[in-house]
Amino acid sequence: MEQGEGGRLESEAVATRDRVTAEELVEAKRQHALASDATSLAQAIALFEALLERQPGQADVQVELAEALVLYGAAYETRRADKRRRFIAAQAHAENVLLANAGFRAAMAAGQRPGQAASQLGENDVPAMVIWATATAYLFDEGMSSLGRLRNFRGLDDLRLFMERAMALNPYHEYGLVPFSLAVFHIAAPAIAGGNLERAAELIEQAIDTPGVSLLPRWGRARYLHIQTGDLDALRADLDWILTQDPEAVDSPFRWNVYVQRDARRMLDAL
Image (cartoon, rainbow, N blue to C red; front, side):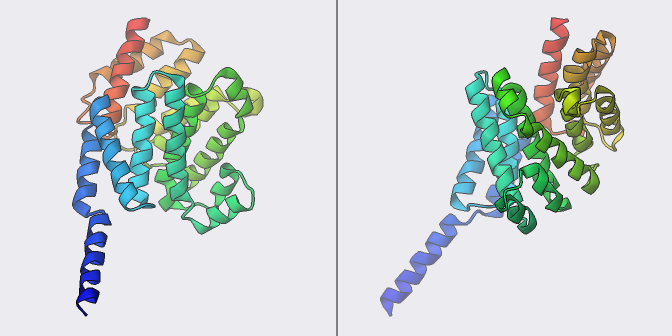
């Protein structure tokens, strides 16, 4: 009897130790929200990884971790191999969340590519879809060589299909992040593969017109679209606008705003 009671108490202690408490998750999210440099973002990543190790499969932890990994790779890694490692890990965490959707999981098990299987996803899946697409875009742009892009070009089409599905589900998610992410496809893909700079410009305008204020669409327009079109006056105007915003007051995440403003200053100084 005593051994049974001891075993029960030990099991309860293990369960308590392994359970991710609401307070711990709130603290990890708080540190993520306030991350302003490589050190603070790495600390947030470490917290999310520790929580996930104790309670695998927790969707909100994986989505936050995936986003943090994308940002760290884009903003703070300098070597292509390190960027690639971060983006692939982010993809995997986001895809794990999406695999909780039975229709998506069945489609993937049947051999469909992620973009094809995206037709099975619903509105609750949009946050993980956007992070998956963001990781894919960065992997293609910053994590691959020219040869790697040629060999993995179908990943961009998956991005397109993901974001077209997300546009149908919730185009207002995160203050225009969905149309902006779809615009990235149209900028990155050649015309023969469906890329269209005019369509990209329309989508970025749609992102900007979405309720709320985000630095990301104008930054993306400056960094990717205006560079391709050669419109330096428009590029300067977008960069100037970004640099006049209060990173703590606009709606896009502070952790991204810090990076975007630093990158905008770099681009402006290089003109």
